[in-house]
Structures are given as C-alpha cells and as structure tokens.
Length: 197
Length: 98
Image 1: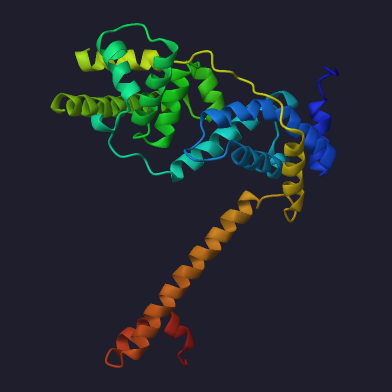
Image 2: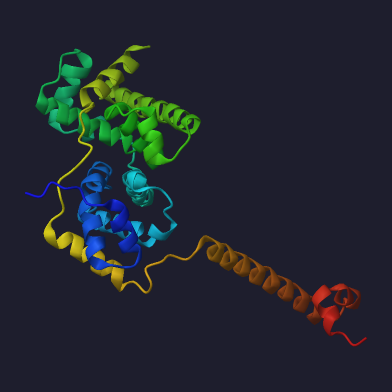
C-alpha cells in the first residue's frame, strides 16, 4: 500500500490550472477532513454527499483566493464546510416548542432514570439523551446551536472552535451565553409541561 | 443552581460525546471524479470577484435611486397646478428651455 503523503502545494498549484487529476487527488486528501464536519452538522433531511459536493465546489471556486500555505489548507477547508452547513441550517425553520407528550418512550425513561434520579446512562440511554438534547437545541438559532454542540457536547477547545468558525473569542463567549440561556428556557418549558402532564 | 438547572446539566452530561472523530473515511472512487466533473463544467470555475459584486450592488442601488427620482419628477410634471414645484424638480430643470 502506498502511504506516501501527496505534495499538497503541488496539487494546489495544478488544481489552480484546472488539472482534473490534481483536483481529484485534492478531493481524496480533503474528504476525510470535511466529511466528519458535514456529517455532524447535517441539516434534517439533507444528504451528506450532496453537501460535501457543494463544499468541494466552493473550495475549488475559491481556490484562487486562498493565500495560506498547504499546511493551513485543511483548516480553511474545514471552515468552508462549517459555513456551508451553517447556511443550510439557517434556511431550516427552527422547531416549535417541544412538548412532553411528543417525547418517545425511551426518552421519557431516560429522563426518569438519568436526569431525575442521577444514574449513570447506559449506551442506549446516551443515544436517547442525545436525541432529546438535539430536539431542544433545534429551537435555538443555527449559530448558537452549532456552538453549543462544539463546546459542550464535543468538548472542543475555544481555540479549535475559533479556528473552525472564524469567530472571535468574545463573540463565541457571548453566543455561548445566549445559547445556554435559550436552552435553559426551552428546558424549563418542557419541565413545566411535564408537571402539568 | 436550582433543581431544573441541575437536571439540564445531567442531560447535557449524558449526551456528551468528547471523543468525536476528527477525520473520516476516504471517498468512494466515483465521488472525486463527479465533484471535479461538476466543477469543470462550470463556466470558468471562478466566482465573481468581491469588487465586482460591490460595484454591481452600487450600480443597482444607483439605478433604483434614479428611477425613484424620475418617477417623482414626472409625477410633478403631470400636476399642472404646481408649476413652481415643476420648476424646482431637479431632473425636469435639465430639460426645460433656458
């Protein structure tokens, strides 16, 4: 098996000359970097391959404007992927208020054991917790939702998030604060709904 | 921190996924080819330059203002009972005999 890393700088130069073989090699280099970003931030009902294709088209059409080194190409590509997903998410309507009656049985069970009784979640319950939190986060604006997922759920560092989003530290902190407040409100609404139920 | 907040924190902790993969699998063989073919099929592959986009916007804005100005001026022209307003209308003055 050939483990040699391709010369990214040369691939970039050739792709700028519209060399198809170099462009294909560049897609193969960047795909493993872009796909996880797209898959984790995929809007409801969207096909990850279509969105990844769109990301690559943006990368190619903006390649002349890319002034960074070959080493910074991955970070730049990741940022384009993130922004493409963000734009897609913005076009989606935010979900209406979540009601207790709408929750599936597994989420209710998880709420009873993990959230109310404070037990350690088993793997099945972790998936339910993730789904429930995703439904609550769907009520937030796209930027705040993505930021919350990056910092709180994926536990990425502030620097990593700054690199991915291109937002300043202050901007990230302010948005994160707003996201927490909105999530707390959505959660309180759901809890109140449960008490009435 | 009240009880509701504590429960939310527990939910977040249960949903956490810190070891999320940073890199994914390689693309399928046809994927790279189809992306590149799509890219090469676009007219020249380059997006409009930012200065071009700005000047297009400025041109559209200027055209809009000009049309509104013309509409106001012509409306004044048709009001025969306000000759002094016709005379003061900037565009109409350009066409009036000296």
